[in-house]
Image (tube, helix red, strand yellow):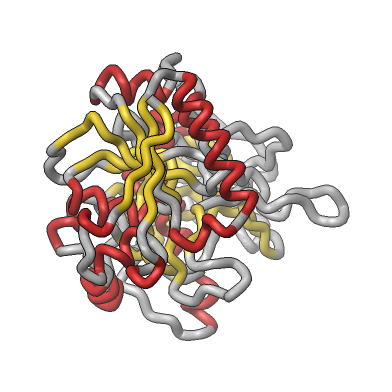
Amino acid sequence: MSMRFKEVGKRGSKYTQCPICGKPDWCYSYETEYNGKLTEYVVCNRFVGRNSIPGFRYIGQTKNGTAKFVSDNDVTGATGYNYEKPVIKKDVERLSDKKLDGLNRTLLANLKLEDYHRKKLNEDGFTNELIELYNIRSYPPSDYDRKNEGLASINPTRSQLARALLEKNNGDLTGFPGAYIKEYKDSRYWTLAGYEGIIFNIQNVYGEVVMLQVRLDNPSPKSGKYKVFSSEAGVNEDGTARMPNGCGPSSRIGLVKPKVIKDSFVCYLTEGWKKAAIASNVFGSLFVTVQGVNSYSDLFAVNDRGERNIDVLRETYGVGMFVIMYDNDKFHNDYVLQAEKNLIDCLSGENFKVATSAWDSYMGKGIDDMLKAGYGFQGLKLNLVAG
Ligand SMILES: [Zn+2]
């Protein structure tokens, strides 16, 4: 980032007099380059108001208490948004799937994949081709940890990422899961939540990225390895939001398409995106992912386009049968069995053929473990339960 301070009236300044107070000295302007765009600020040492003037939008006071303006002429300022003082809102509504898609893709486009993450993904069965196909990236540590714990990253800082997203969404990230307003001393700014790791994107039935999920680099035994990218964090004791303007993605289903679809009549349904992506490419089949065994309601819900997700699967892809494929260890659990039974009822009620799948426990816990161990499709036992 380059910054050039120019006192008005001095050589090199574009102003012979301050555009705010009209005097030929003491005030200054500077330009900052951000994402290749030039933003121009004017700081007037005489102005005592708190209002914008034609051509220059008042954005607050500098540390010295003088008035700061952003020129309407620059691209960044033209959004009309006050980057320095975002407004905290009480009611936060999640953005539309179309907007989520745009922002999630902007975030991913600003991220690179760390070598150690690529190595881990390769070990887990993702070829470099699949890594590209699914746009898998690294999510950097928090800015605090980078600064104070010296954690290195090839990626931009969280606040830089937030800034890129603000540019994309007219200066407001309210309703974008993962983003929130950070208040620190006198400053207030947008940043991003969550721990560092590998970031996967979860797409809806139209291929829109509606949700992100991070495989944590340092999972705690309690929280598990995977976290949805979210800034839904509840409230403090005084009722204020822990992460102002934050929100969660809610429990979405994902549709995983393999590089080559061999057969889309049978659609598998499993918990967890990563194993679905691996298995999808082995089978050449569609996979629907759920966030938890009981989180399939989105499958039958009406989406932003007024269509039911289940109908899109049937009509666009010709899905006629579902195979429910939960982890092998789950079936000792009554809660899982009940959830599976309910799901079977819902699917057969929609006239789908339904099967459950199982494999011997020595083959591995998840379908990904089983495939990695070399058992393949032949190791699967399918049990037709409806249709
Ligand atoms: Zn001035």
